[in-house]
Image (cartoon, rainbow, N blue to C red; front, top):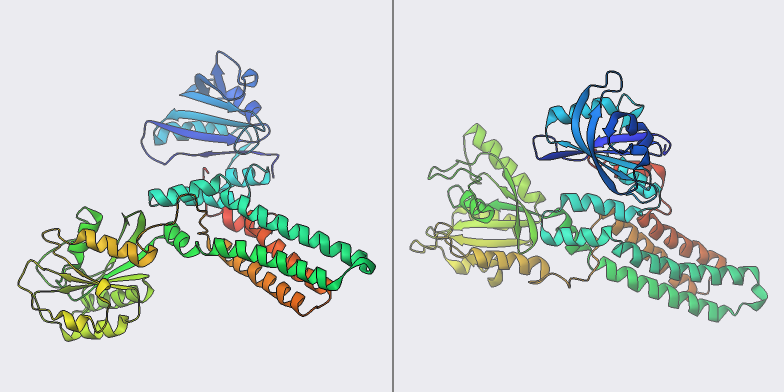
Length: 458
């Protein structure tokens, strides 16, 4: 696979200042050289230099585009192969003309994520770093970007490497005792197994402690804004998004479908779902919207229940509060700029005082308190320290839990003085499960699945 040359557009499709086409492969420089007219032949260009010139048609010599070409010679490139990056004028036609010429030179179009996959196969990065590249691209907050950037730099890989080294030392000790049983002191070996297992389990536990926060930073909190019609749900969405995303009128039932919007609050990404007002209705279209609202509520990580503080509680609202009782809910008493008629004591039967926020979305009052309440609910008011390695990938979390279970089995077996060769099976399994996180023991099918999630030019 690594013997051929691949090419893809690495910048977004559309108009822009420049577009970048990336070409990678052992023969990429010699294959692009006949297409590039410049003062210095591309084959003679030094690594990490930029050259001005023109891409020409190989048959007619017609100038196809004015470009800057960057040369990066192996192994000093992202893929560890020879890489040529062609900077063209930003535009669909200019990019297409250059790509057409390249694909005539036995250069094929790259598969999604293939550049990063080649970097992994070339030993430039491990699998956890490769997956962090996706997180970097998809980051929805500064904090999420910082976490992903640290993982691209190898912060998680280093932690996993330390844990695997401890298990390797334990496996080596076990191997010696299996090969030379006459020198084995059973009780001492059992204690050593327990000590090492406890040490590694502690390291795994420290990583898993960050899993909830890391997953939130990576994927965001799915947040459903619910309530009866005309209580201010769409106004709240617009206030949190800082722009008019949803239509707001005095007519009940204006919102008839679920509207999605991503916002960032105190560095926490929220996927806001503005739902149709929940009420009994004979309107067929509105009824579909209400059913979708109920589905959104069932799938949400956080529910923002909006109530009209200028009206008494309605029977529909009491029913809704019964349904969401025990979930992660913040109750918003909206329209506090009007004379209050809502009995707060009833709300306290369902929610803690800290989960009730008084607001006037119209006058933009109480928004800061709501944002603080969201932060407090999920992060205790603040994120962990800046030097912490977060685990956010679902695959990583599952493998860490499996490794922890394998070591727990090894620990319990050592306590019961089960033969050491049986304990070795669990220790080796934990070592392999941790290795799967960084790709040392990953199957080809897993690699294909992971890299297929990338965009085309990455």
